Image (cartoon, rainbow, N blue to C red; front, side, top):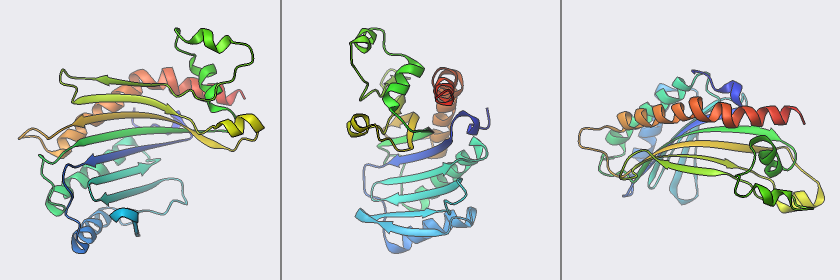
Length: 247
């Protein structure tokens, strides 16, 4: 599957590389990294700093689809919201990881964790916790609780994390996140907010001697896409979309 846009209102593909040591963070270094990203993607024109030494380069958000990247004291990030095809986002992340070792003095040893996240957002006005229960059901061991008289779901965010190897360094996490709070449920005053589904493939620890960050993120992207296409799309995303459309 090349295009995930039909699976939710919005989708995005993010790469996060967390390091054990502080990254090279001089003015010249940060600007050189941003300039090299902009050279590859000229529409990334908005550069700004945030608190705690974070620097962001991004495209305009008005069109609904945009690229962004950031450098933090101990993290390199890259993201693409609503890419035309998932391979477009992956090419951007590979470029970011190609640049990082040379410009930011990043060694394969200096990897705390590398993440590839595919996220899906559904816009829904109402009790999102209740919606999840109706669309996906409740864990059988806890389902009887939902039949208690007068009950309302105020928190229902299923999460599952799996290890893909014996030493638990390669993991995959599927989780749902709601934005409904108790005040909204009590008053019945809901805003149009995002219900999110996250599929995260993560690799912990230093890379092997002959492995590059680009090769590592390719492995993670294969895993995350496999989980989306063969396990999450039909069992989670489609039921959510169907249930929302019936409201």
